[in-house]
Every structure is written in structure tokens, then in C-alpha cells.
Image (cartoon, rainbow, N blue to C red; front, side):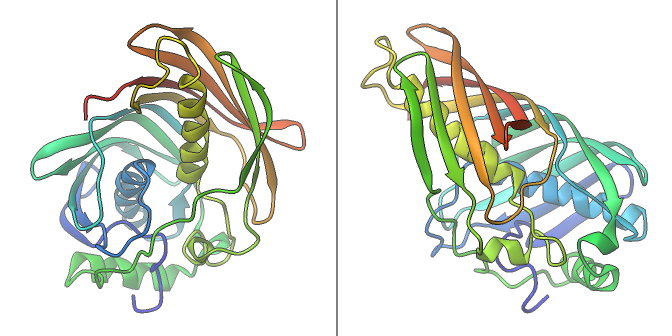
Length: 278
């Protein structure tokens, strides 16, 4: 695995594999990582489920981001902490994987994923099957070298419309080059869906801070629902992001999120932002 899966891989070792049913693993956020968004905990659970899926079809296909029914955040991981990961496989074949899962720190659940579906596409479009098989054997054995992930940069977003407490729009400029494209994916670079959700969450938190009942409060993402990723985003693409308030109270706000490329909707979600007790 040396030289591979160094920039956007969030499973260090697979500790249990019950084919077609359950998979467990570990990931330690490097102490030197500059930025580890909470959405990457969901990425870690999804990657763990993907290893189960890929091994079950003999590495002929791999899952890609599709649908996520609900992601609940109960905490966040900071550099140096270890995530205990688990995924329950509900269905898996060469067309799709359906799964749910959790991420925990020191036995305390910090993230729950439910009702996720990832379409399975031919592996050869994204990576060399024999190389992925070798990486799987490493994860099942001694594990990958620690400290591989350096963090992700703050996204380049420019506000284009700001109706305080109602709507916020921005343009996200996806970088032409970034280290995570080496992992996601070697043969077909794609902007990770979890980073896109993190960008949309950033927009939602900013908009929630405008609401009179929440202004000045410390806010956090509590839940992301009904995530649908309809298309791949290539390096260098410009995306139009939007957060729109649906309802709010003194405890938080509920919003609709969308991402568009050239006027075409490529991703949608709903998000609940709440006051943070941390």
C-alpha cells in the first residue's frame, strides 16, 4: 500500500469481516492532520463498507456515492483520536450495496449512518483491480501505515447571494489538482461527495448564524438527511451551492441544500443545524 491510498483513505485496518453481513475496522486521524471535517467520519464508514462490497464481488466492481438516508452527528474526531468503525451490510451484489454503520471514539458513538445505497460500477474505470486486492490484503493483515492523511484545505467558495436568514448561495471552485484525487480515484479523479456535503454544511452553518434566535450561538450540524448525489464532479469544475431555510426555532434550523453544475442539479440534501452544547 506504500504510495497508494495515502491522501484520502480512512481505514487503517480491518479487524472483523463477516462477508455479506458485517465489517469492522479502525482509523486513527493523524496527529499532524491540518483539517479533518466531521463529514470524513461518514467517509470512513462508507469506505469500510466499500471494502466489504469489493471483496464480495472479487474486485470486479466498486461502489460510488449515491444515496444516504440519514447521517447523525454526536461528536467529532480530532487529530490523534482513533475511530472504531462498523458497517452492517443489508444487501450487496454487482449492482449496488445497501448498508448502515457507525463511528465511535473510546466506545462512544459519534456518528450514525442509516439507509445508504452505493451503485456498483466496473472497478477498471477507477483503479487497477489487482492493486485494490493487494490493498485489501494489507488491511486484513498488518494494516496500512499510520499518518498518511495530511488534511484537506479550506474550500474556495465565493458568496453570490445572501438573503439573511433565508438563503445563501455561493460558487465552489473545485481545484484542478489536489492530493485526494490520487486516491479518489487513481484512474478517474472525482471530487469526493463527502467533501461536497461538508461544503454545503459550511454554507448552512453560516446561514443559520444569521437567524435572530441563533445569532451569536455556537452551532453544529446534527443531522443530514435524504442525500442524493446524481453525478460525478471532475477536477476544476465550478459548482453553484445553495442553502435555503425551511424552518427555525431557538434550538436550531432545518434547511434544504443543493449543488448544481452548469444549471443541472447534481446533489441535494436536507440538514438540521442545532445549538452546540460542546
